[in-house]
Image 1 (cartoon, rainbow, N blue to C red):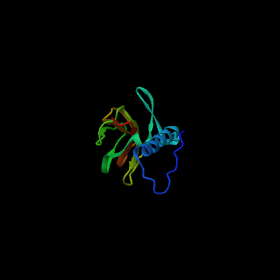
Image 2: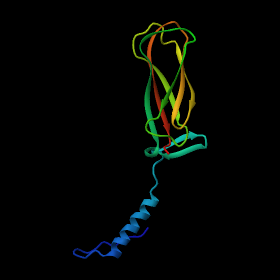
Image 3: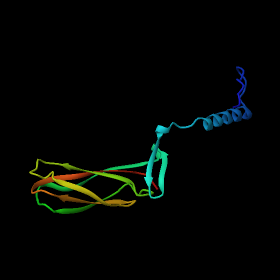
Image 4: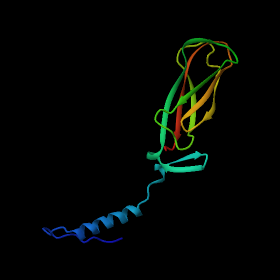
Length: 148
């Protein structure tokens, strides 16, 4: 890497000196690599994509299934979808779904959440109940992927 001569006091800075400084800074920048912990690996339909964490897109959202206590029975299945309001992902993102009981319920926790389809703009899921009782719940979603 080039060494930049230190200017004397009172010496005027000219274009060639500033050019030397810019060249040395650019060389230094190209030699310093970003630490690996600043990268995210996202599995996509085109294989694993590595990107800076600052270049990934994270969407967290919630879907209300029942806002008040509602009677449920075994086999009851509710289909819902969630659109990513912040725009589309480049590839379908990795999505997790977690059911959250929003009120004390009788046997309402005997359920499953199944993600049926993930696209670049939305996720479709089904909540299936296995017990009888009352339930008030929502499903929290987290989607991580690469933006367009």
